[in-house]
Amino acid sequence: MEDLLKLKGKNIVIMGVANQRSLAWGVAKSLQKVGANLIFTYRKERSVDRIQKLLADHEFEAKVMVECDVNEDESIKQAFKKIGEEVGTIHGIVHSLAFAHPEDLRADFVDTSRDGYAFAQDTSAYSLVAVAKQARPYMTEGGCIVTMSYLGADRVLDGYNVMGVAKAALEASVRYLANDLGKDGIRVNAISAGAVRTISAKGVPSFNKILNKIEETAPLRRNITQEEVGNMTLAVLSDLSSGVTGETIYVDAGYHIMG
Image (cartoon, rainbow, N blue to C red; front, side, top):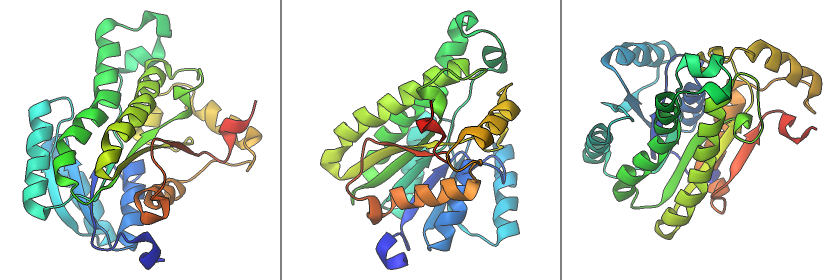
């Protein structure tokens, strides 16, 4: 299988590990199994200890760890400059970053503040564009950028509000970036993951109801796991998906197909 994936020794940047439940950590576990070099970014110094503890607990090794605040262009530029200096070539990026102010999730969408709307878009959607721009010079052998989306990009989900609009912008950005970067052999795709208990999910007031509804309604009659998201992301990053770009791939037990 490793020969088919062709990810052994490849340099993959993972953005967005908050704790062991993070989708990004699920991806890291899948990548580690096939021998990829793991490069982690973190937003604040306090995040370093959490990532290092996860690495130690699982006996993983980070090739590089670098600070990167995706709300700041200079921080992104310096982060990828450092990564480039350390490893030379970047073969893949996992963008698993999203945030909105809690008050903009609890209130009606029509009451979203201007600042809250802009902040959710900047952090959750524009950050992918900014990251792709700075990573592009180091992706000299092509590769793949994968971001994490959610069904709220396409449907109205109670309590998702401004984040749903940001995810819609994220998925549109995937398509436009795929067109821009395709000439460089760089693919760009999104994984629309089903409901998984992450820190971000806790911010959605109706999350427990969503979990129950999926179990009742999805074709597989269950919720999905962090491992399943990690494995599909692995496949999308790998040569198995060499002809796939600009796509949103659902890993949600089939829930999105139901009426």
